[in-house]
Image 1: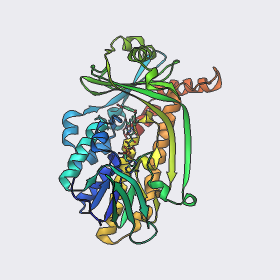
Image 2: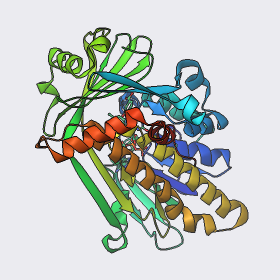
Image 3: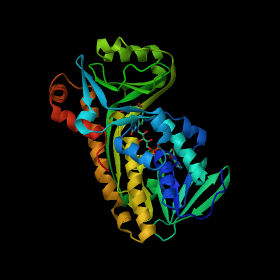
Image 4: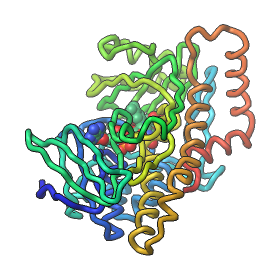
Length: 395
Ligand code: FAD
Ligand code: DHB
């Protein structure tokens, strides 16, 4: 790690996709920053998470020098499949929108991001504990933290909180100046990674009486699957056999026949919630990515929202330094949140349509859910609306 500075223009808290992409894009625009990360580099690089990169997110990564490995090792998907009542429907993105998505694991993107941040010479300070932010309502905020028992302080022009859903930065905005919105879903996802060939060339989202299932992939030899589980479940309750038999039961028979099972190499349980904290700015503190909004993974939007927030913020900061204009900074929260809320809506819609809600009686809500799926299966207009959102709304 390079030396810890005492002064820089921008201190970024959190080295996940939002924070490390921000550091790189600022470097491209000639703006100096330092990146603080709570965990070790190794820990951040081991986390298995998202897999779907929207059309425009991928374009941005390419334009900023991050496309090489994504284009070599990722997969372009021109459609996605929905399964329901034993039927499969392919939503043809290319035909309906002229766009596609790229399947490229967040784990791989995170590697590319740390590599580029190192090459840019941005100080990436990992194992930075007890981050504190002072003076965000003044001209020169300061960020204090402890690393390996030593206290450090970095003064700066702006502090950016990219520290994810469990981060602390947003707590430095006075409670009276921010508002949160939340919806908890009464279930979670159990995810499994295996060294097995994917069941299909494209993703399959399945709605079934027993609950939701998702078939995804990382490459020709590595598959990623998810099944809906009870809200309070644990990984220990999902030995591989139980996972595979539950997944098999939730897929149409003809599809399940092609499933290749094998030992899991990673397993997670992830709760589902929609959560938003507004606004994204207070004085000289700004928030981006999961630090300010979390969506259920069903729509594959979280990583993509982190990317769009960062793009807006870099524009705003560059306007400030290049032209002395604070208009972009003043508009950042409203501009970013307009896009965020549309993704919150889409993720909620996908989640509500495809999951089995415990306690949902066999009448009104389930009939609505079936009607929603039947409508989607039968209407090209409905399919186009889904495709447009899935490949990503324009930035
Ligand atoms: P994070 O990735 O959470 O990064 C925050 C960073 O801040 C972390 O490195 C953390 O260690 C660090 N940090 C935390 N606290 C502190 C602190 N106090 N001080 C310093 N650093 C701190 N999204 C998609 O777009 N497509 C998908 O297909 C998709 N699938 C998903 C599947 C699963 C199972 C899950 C769990 C998520 C999925 N997501 C998906 C969501 C996506 O992974 C997140 O939205 C994305 O990681 C957000 O990036 P971020 O940088 O904002 O936050
Ligand atoms: C993956 C995760 C998602 O949440 C999703 O909607 C699609 C794919 C994945 O991990 O591959």
